[in-house]
Image 1: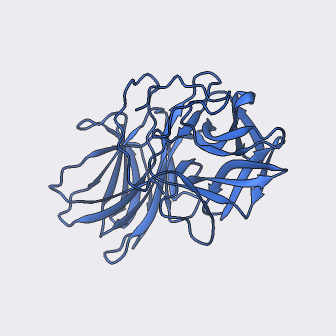
Image 2: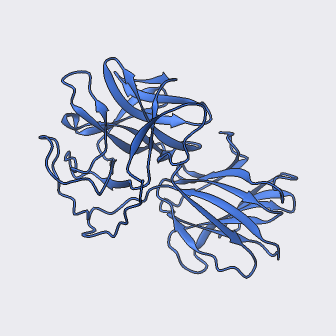
Length: 314
């Protein structure tokens, strides 16, 4: 599920910003009243454009800098005894707050800000402590960065795991569509195809032949040392994670993701097609602008004609 960050907040606690690249966040809170999540363009004091308040006066609120807000009465939404699950999204023209695995938000507020990339966790006018568990996705790297500093995690090498009842704890976050999406792969029409896993449905979905196809038997991508980078034209970095193969010629396919209607959807990349195909709204959609998932510690030898490296990744 990405990198698990555990933290606590109190009135005197130093609130830190965390970078989130996929337009959504899943988190758990334990405590009573006034849990606050700020959304900002940059990590600076008083920089939050939106505040999402959970349990404030037995209600939930979304407030922006112009004091426009939405609220809903939600008694007993937080607990001192157990963690409660929530999600926030902000990439489809609205800031939304949801609870648990329910894909329908508690409420939403129209959003015109397109570059919200940071979140912070806080309390509002109270002295008690709140405890948080936050799943943060792998971070996108700007292709212009020359030598990003990456630390190899012991045992973090990407691997495919057969999906059973429960989602593996180290599942790689792939994107967001009303909820956090994960990366899966399944067989379809003689191809081994990567796509998206939707937890609330318990199903995987792949793009093929112009349509989106549902899968009940599939594998989930797990690991820690994964990085999203933008693709330069139609060239595939040699560290790209192999996810399967096409039905014709068994061309190697890779994991990609692209924006569609404000959602960030994982899909498949066949290098000879020069696009990323994503399964969305029942159909297969081709995107020419997309990111690709890499394992930066992979050896840099050329494996085939589709491995063309123009990325400086240590």
